[in-house]
Each structure stands twice: as structure tokens, then as C-alpha cells.
Length: 331
Image 1 (cartoon, rainbow, N blue to C red):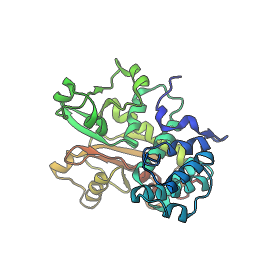
Image 2 (image 1 turned 180 degrees about the vertical axis):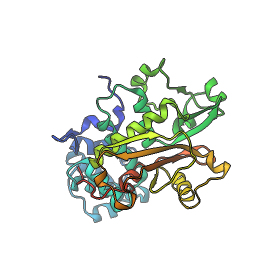
Image 3 (image 1 turned 90 degrees about the vertical axis):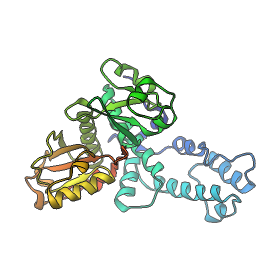
């Protein structure tokens, strides 16, 4: 089986008998190596002391006064945020449980930390897959995308890579910045995904009716089953007409706003319709778990981009927004 996403820290974690991720000292120490926390040459003694003691014992309690005496304000704030996040991870029995608690309770946490948790949880969820399309679709969960229409196709490229990579003819054809070097994932180059998975330099075709949207739906079904212990079937909706939105979940901020319009008025303007990337129909394998008000009705998942072609998924909405009567206990 090919390995992938080595940068997420999955191999630093353990798994329990239920297949959920267990925090380790090695995983915590990886945060201490981040440039935001590694003391620079001119760091004060207090900052060096905190960093040094945590390298020896990353679970050691850190008092607020130990952070308060750090001279550099940015470093002080970074440590306050990091220690609060570390303490949250330590307080929960699995990484999945820590993530669920964060999104269900609305606890403030930097988006970067949420993305990192989503990244490593999806690495766990997709551990045995040999399908590069599933993995590239899963990147939408934790990496912002830049979408461009070219030749009748809707292409999603990693936003960070678009801004930083080297030039290519494909990028120019897609109207992307001249710094982008991108291959669109297809059957011919799919085998190369594994060796470049941490570069996030492959684009995905999200055109309606093609495999990219189907792959994203499959990832979504696995995400829900892993975190909520709920089996669902998810299929893309090709036609936007005659949708009765008894319940919907916006998979990003723009989709939530468009869903509100559809729910109230039932129609979207032409400009708004062009922003819809996908609509999925979700049905529950066990209908008895669904709230009475939507019993027998499908749930719709909406994915959209901004007018500038930006797409930033919010997978936490799948945890908090589904009409489930009794959510499973956190993993």
C-alpha cells in the first residue's frame, strides 16, 4: 500500500482498538519544532526555558506566569495559544474526540490547528485507500482551493501552491497566476500522486458529472461515518431544478448563504447559480436516527465558491449541521 501525507504527523500517533488516533509525546514535540515556537537566536531566557522543558516533557503543565514573562509579544501570544491547544488535546482520549469537542463547543482555535486535525484524521480515515482521486478530493477539507473554468471544465488547484509554485503552460491556459505549476489529476498521472502528495501540486476536475465530485462525495461519507458512527449514502445532484430543501448543510461560508436563499425563495439568480460547485443528496442508512421534521426527506449538501473563485471548505459543518436525533459519543 502506498504511503501519503507524511507531513500531517499520522505516523507519530498511535491508534486504539476502535481505529481512532491517540496522542503521543512525539506528536506534541513536532509542534515545538514549528518556526512559531522554536526560539530564534535572540529569544529571551524565559522563552528558551519553556521550550527546553517541553522538549523534555511535552505534557508538562505550563503556568501562565511562565508565559507572561516572555519578552517578545508575538512569541508570548504564540505560546498562550499553543499551550491552550495542547491542553485541549491532552484532555481528550483521542484526536477525533478533541476535534469534535472543538467544533461542537465553538471553542476559539486558530484555523491552522483545525486544518491540521482534519488533515491527520482524514489520513486515518483513508489509510487503506489506493485511490488517488479520493485523496486529492480530501485535500479540499483542509486546503483552500482556487477554482477556474477552462474549456468547459471546472478545475480546483491548491491556493497556496498557485501562489508559490513555478510557472507552467497549463497555469497560463487556466488563467492562474504565472507562478503556478499544476497537473490536473487523471488516470494517466494518478500513480504520481503518492510521491508528490505532500506538495499539493495536482489539480482536480470538479466538473458536474465527472469523477472529482463523486470522489468528494465518497470522502464525505467516510468522514461522517468515522466521526459520527452514522452510515450515509451521498450522490451528486446534476440538476439544480426542483430541489426541496427540507434540510441542507453548507460546506463552506458561501454555500451556507446560497442555501439560505434557496431555502427561502427556491431560486437563485444567474450569477449566484454560477457559484455553485456541487450539490449532494444525502440519505441515512438508518432513517430512525433522523429528526422528525425531515423524516423521509433527503438532506442536501451544498458546495460553492466565491466570485473570485476561492473555495474554503468547513468540514465542521458536517459534524454540527446534520439532522441527527442522537449523535454518537465522541470517539
